[in-house]
Image 1 (cartoon, rainbow, N blue to C red):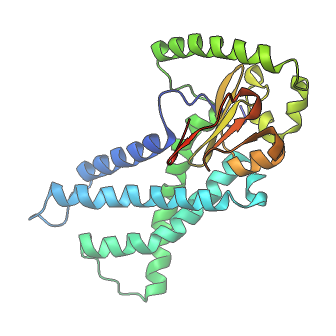
Image 2: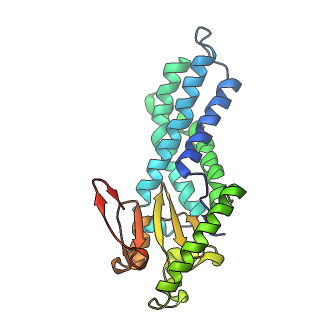
Image 3: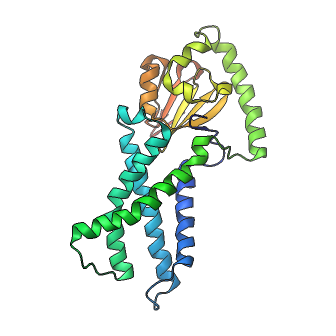
Length: 256
């Protein structure tokens, strides 16, 4: 499937942090708190920090690495593994500090040895969890309700028909768009000229006249592949094709 998904009703940020928070609550109930005075309340605080913290760190690492052309050229699974490993590396000192604060651990070894031991404990579950929660997106799982999908299809079909009538007379054949590497990551059923692109954390939402899909890609790289003449960016997280834009009006920080 090459790393695509219909974004549907679930945003990546809500998905990732909801899973991390859920895992935090799960661990809080499974692993008892060493401090009986705080009990479950302390465990919840501790494990929310222990799950949301690495999630945020890994996301930051992935977004930072996505600025590198060499990283973006890698297989999606390898990119996720690398960003997960870096996230675990940077979060492990924080995890060590949290163990000291919440669990009262005392380190008999020197700090370097203690950090290496903590990294060995943090990295495997962090990387495996990162790969697991990304797997539905990379494999192409649909996360839309049937009702919202039906409503969306009606509105999109009407809109796309009007846009196609206008654009097909002046644009190059559909096959020409396959020269752009990011377009080849889309499902074949929706490969066509891009209407707009939207950055979604470390994913890219690509909308064409045939549908939309989320791929593991960087917005700036996609724009570079297309060339600046194809469209414009009303916001750093968006790109819109010239041929589907009727007007461009800026109102403060908003664009209509």
